[in-house]
Amino acid sequence: MARPTKAEMLAAIRRARGSLRRKPGGKPFGVRRAEYKAEEMELEERKLRRHR
Image (cartoon, rainbow, N blue to C red; front, side):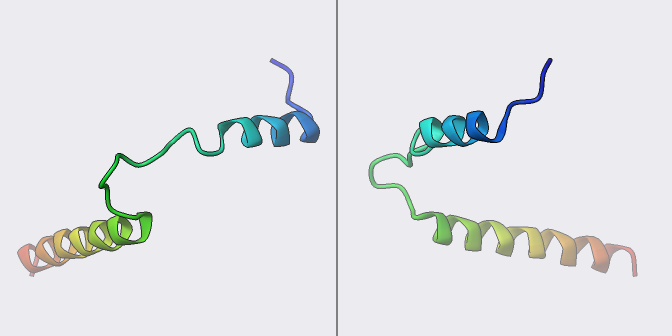
């Protein structure tokens, strides 16, 4: 498979932009990411506590 040119890649990105929309009433990306990171930190802390 041939590698796409820069122009083709930019065109594909422009076409895809906005295709992944959040659901009506959904949380903004920043809020979702903050919650996800907090969950990940908690998992890491639990894992570290278990190995002490």
